Image (tube, rainbow, N blue to C red):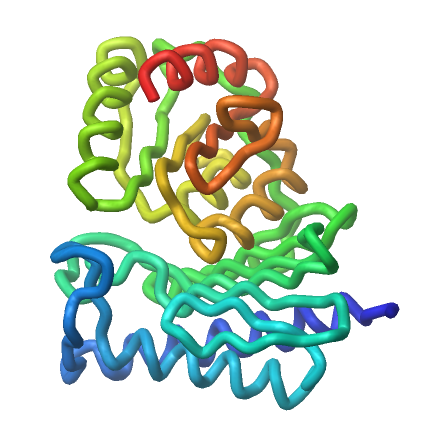
Length: 258
């Protein structure tokens, strides 16, 4: 079944901006829910309201599409198309006011990502990509860093804050920090889109979920970021990204430690 990807992108961008505005408006009055998988896996009523806003609109526009959504508003579909939604990637940053967060929407045809939006509400920035159509920031084309050597590179690090993954992240950081220019911890979607626009030279994400990386990965790839994991394909268990020049050394170091 054909799909107007430009129309899908435009709707997703509008929904992401609307969800981001909701998050900014309700930040002072949010209500926390019970932790999910572990004590550091937090959720608020704003996460849930943002997801509902996005999923309701997508379902109204394409009722036969499937939806995978972090906060439980997913649904099956039979069109061959599926939406992958993280309504608020970086909830801990959002509620504590200690860093950035984003709204992430990706559209898949089968197992293939075809459209992606990552919106940063605080910065008012929207990153987008269509499969084979390049990557953009607020409508302007973006490209990945040409890549300084690892000793000068700024590397993004993303990981789930559960005990097992924190131990993995500690090993990777101990390996990378003395060898790299510096590192930044940042939510996974922004890690990937910052690589796409050259703000980060490379990055890695450990033990994510598909909704954490689906949108950012397509944007990064369309901008020229090389992505992989322990093998040639990235995964939710390990995603490594960098420009072509930096990729071999960064990937070798991360794979050895992760």
